[in-house]
Amino acid sequence: MPLADADTASYEAGEIAAFAAERPVTAMRVIERGGELFYGGEVEVFVAALPRSLGKHTFLRFEVKCRKREDSPIKNGHHAVLSAHPYSLGWCHFEPFKPPRLESRSNLNMSHAEESELAGALAYLARLDCDYWETSHFRTAGFTDVGQRQSWDGQRDNRRGLLHLLGVCEDANAYKDLLMRHPSVQKLLTETEKRIIRIGSADCSAHGKRVTVHEQVVGEAWELMTLAVRQALAGPHKDGERWVEGKLPVHSKVDRIYRDLLNARNRSVVKQRQREDGPREDW
Image 1 (cartoon, one colour):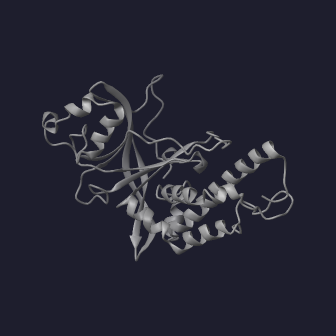
Image 2 (spheres, helix red, strand yellow):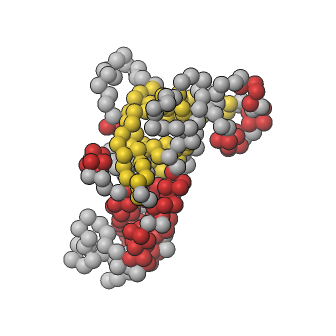
Image 3 (cartoon, rainbow, N blue to C red):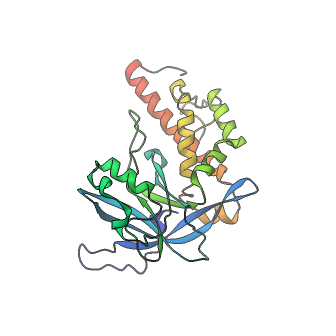
């Protein structure tokens, strides 16, 4: 669910430069029924971007929290999925929900992590079976290394209207593999390889011809599809109720995201080639 769409009615304008560090939002659940993935409705979570310190390192950590209740649909080990929209920004990340820390930090033997470089310290944190900072009644998924967007030369990076999408699911990696094996996903990859897939909102070029995928983009199809699958697990960027109530499968969202990514990437490559080599009838 887009974080920008969350109910913020209780956060009235306050003092200048003052805002809540933590706020409630909703995340879209992804559930499995009969071997098929669906959007299962929204669940309340809390999000915060907080400065954290470990030894000599200080970094900003984006945290997703849920109350540690028996009836919560989010359990220890479930995943939070954080993605950016527009999808062409090209990044998405998974992190597991962990229980709060119940023992003293001194018992965790963090001296090696505190002395390591930042990447090593973050890797050590990722291996802990509890959240290093949470000691209360919340499960926490902490994003300390969300990685960079896909780096493609000439890719347009339009940050106006940027949203963060947030989903939750039982096992993001298993669900990703399930979607990658889905017949509809395999069909899209086959159509891309054969260069017969239809892309773009109108499915046609300005001259009335069907858009042909550039051969360079065909070679990137698997990477683009993997990204589309991951992004779909973060939930739809709009009309969430329609996806839930209509019982529309997640692979339908994958289809839409993939075509958008393919179209954006194809436009970028074609424009780049035209600048270098001049226009051609068919790539």
